[in-house]
Length: 99
Ligand SMILES: [Zn+2]
Image (cartoon, rainbow, N blue to C red; front, side, top):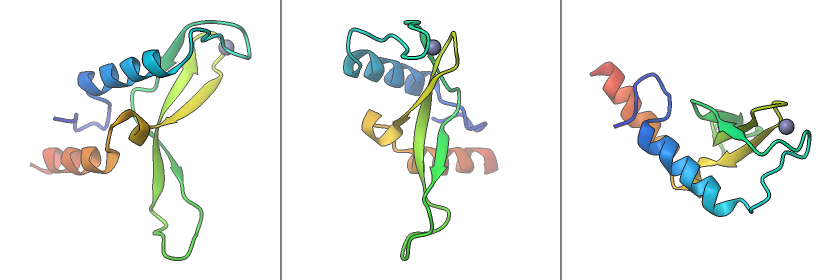
């Protein structure tokens, strides 16, 4: 069950961490500072889709932000690639919040 405050559940956080560990290469050095340690955002990040005919203005890409713990260099990974359907998570969270 997703958390009603919009943050990733422990299971989702584990899924993201496992995905990164299995999909990123051995060299995880930040290109900005060579640090090897990265954190992930506690909540999803959305990048809105530009106005395109036939696509709602509320459409966006749901992402997790991966952040270098030393310099803040940030990368964005699509939640769909990780196997997290954020539309379903948002819908369930809204229902949980509203009872
Ligand atoms: Zn860095």
